[in-house]
Image 1 (cartoon, helix red, strand yellow):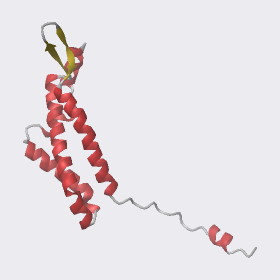
Image 2 (image 1 turned 135 degrees about the horizontal axis):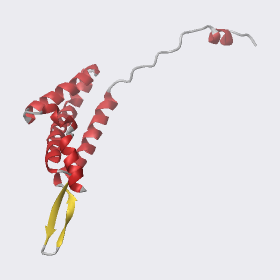
Image 3 (image 1 turned 60 degrees about the horizontal axis):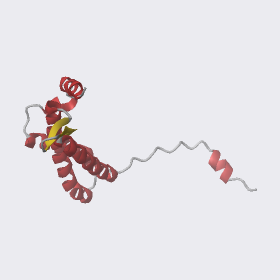
Image 4 (image 1 turned 180 degrees about the vertical axis):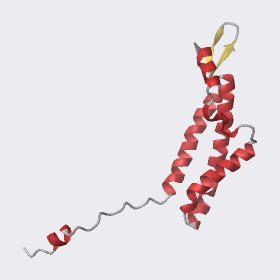
Length: 138
């Protein structure tokens, strides 16, 4: 059953093909451009503070891409043997690293998202009701 799941994953790699044939540096640059476009609205002081976060997010995005490729090729599990009699199947090292890195990536993206100014909700047009209620002499 494990092999069937892994084989299905190989058939449908998803976003793995997004950066196919590009170097890690090219992927990092693309991620930085993507993130930079989102954070254009920030003032200069905040932009300087977020540069390191954007850099780290871009690196993690590129690393996650590499890990997804390896997981698609090798599968989610690997066999292990401790000594002569103990054998089994465990999560692959790539899956463990991916799980840890995706959590860190999402935390950095949340930090960056929290810095983006919230758009103000458009207020309702004045229909005169509030003026009527506030202008009463009771």
